[in-house]
Amino acid sequence: MKILLFDPFNGIAGDMIIGALIAAGADSEAVRSAMSSVVAEPDFKSVVKHGITAVKVETNAERTHRNLDDVIEIVLRSSASKEVKDMAVRVFHRINAGETAVHGTVTHFHEVGADDAIADVIGACTAFLSINPDAVAVRPINLGCGYIHGEHGTMPVPGPATAEILKKSGLETFMDTDTETGELCTPTGAALISEFVAYRSGADSETAGETAAAMPPCMPHGKIIASGYGAGTKDLPRSANVLRAMILESDSREENFVDILETNVDDVTGEVLSYTMQRIMDAGARDVSAAPLLMKKGRCGYLVRVICVPGTADKFVQILSEELGTLGIRHIKAVHRSILHRTFEEVKLLINDETYLINVKIGWIDDAPATFKAEFEDVKKCALKTGMPMKNIAAMAENLALEQIQ
Image 1 (cartoon, one colour):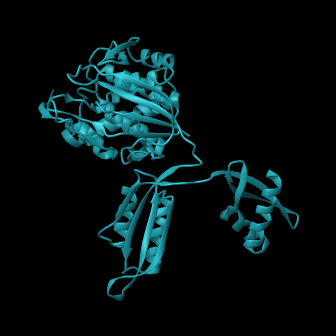
Image 2: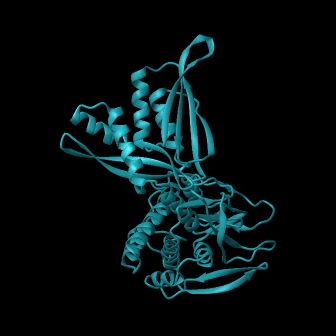
């Protein structure tokens, strides 16, 4: 499992993301080609910031203000791949949503509507997809401190649009109050990192922005196989204005992370509880269960537990609140779980001259199969057509799977 870890200890911006990913091994020529197709050819050069060597990206673009339709048209005309274009469009929709939430209808982008921002987004998306990580982790983002000066006047850090984008992302942040550093996290940087996290957490692109980190914000377990630094424009007085990106190789058989939601209820019927559990599973939960409880004052109730991907908890909290009327839900974040490496073996059962395909899930410990589980829906279909007991069909399929892998 390849994990891409961003460490924005001194902020994050579009050019810093490109530089860090190139330094960590992204395809620099693909990035250069994609950026050149929307503006002039960029420069990638090595600089030193407080003793740290980093890649500095210069787009060589002019600052021309554009509206969202103009920006998307330029993105779609670029020579980048369709996947890069789709991702870039989602990034600009995030920025537009942030601007709209703060300023109302946005006739044109301000600081992020220039050609250099378009080039940064295209380049960053190209670099990210060339690395193609299995998961993304983001350590807390340094927002900076002090004030920014834009077309809407002087405002405190973080800027309103940046704050709105980060609010929807669920990413953790902090403010460097030791010195007047100004803005360290830009709207473009916030939108890009939010999109990367959502992309690898399996979020629906149409609900972009309603997700958090696909991995916990701490250092994930794994071996560091690459690292690099992307340089920002500012020269900070006491530290390097760089973004660090690291690629870690983690054994997916040994670790995974989930969030756990729990609530106690004592005033719902079994029918309502069953419907709620099905709705939660349909919304993408890893698992949901309900266990009977004896609660205070001798009341009978249920402990409802939802297991979900980190960063997706909000939608399940909403479902629990809507359907069960619960006023409090416990949220246990980033719980480590050990899982076996899993594969699927398709077997063919011949029953009454008919062939039935059954998928069998196999759990492995090292190179030996440890568990066999025939897929319920496949077994159910076979049982309905043949009239045989499900347990018999499952046993036949699992035994056949064992024979096939041996």
